[in-house]
Amino acid sequence: MYQLVKDFFNGLWNENPTFKMIIGMCPTLAVTTAAMNGIAMGLATTFVLVFSSLLISLLRNFIPAKVRIPCYIIVIATFVTVVDLFMAGYFPAMYKILGLYIPLIVVNCIIMARAEAFASKVTPMRAIADALGMGLGFTWAITLIGAVRELMGSGTLFGFPVFGENVTRWVIMLLPPGAFITMGVLLGIMNLLTRRGVKNTQCH
Image (cartoon, rainbow, N blue to C red):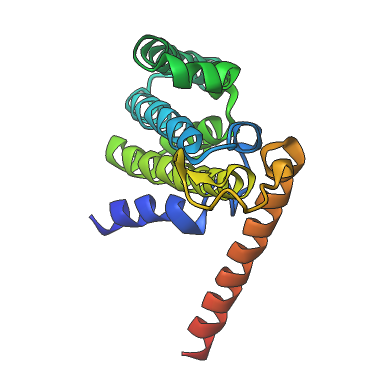
């Protein structure tokens, strides 16, 4: 049980895919113009990550080593298709916003990395715990980036007005440069918090 909890929390902070491992940058920088976009993209990725990791773990002893990568891609693509059709049918407005980045989950290096480095080597329960932690870690990270960009660029949060009409909107935050600026600042803050945490641990 301890190992499952450790695997889960590892993705939330210690090996957060966005702020620690710096992978999956394509959707992170492209769709985070609003906090809700981050939640939608994060949950879609989490669904694919959890179920593909589970299936790969279950089949790990049956997949030949020489064809493991193509097999992983087929498994991942199957669950991406499920998400793609589900969002197109039930959430067309959000699907239109996320657009091409839903199918591109297939080649998201977060999912492939966890399949190759973790799910293919551990039990199904550990694979689920790791995938869930990584997925939710990715979700909160891109939601935070989206929230900052939305607040500064539109003056809203989840579509609701936060600042008055007289507050200047930084339109650049909704453009590609704003994504890099926000990512850089938040990454610096996360590194600072991590270093302080390490120092406090060493002092004790």
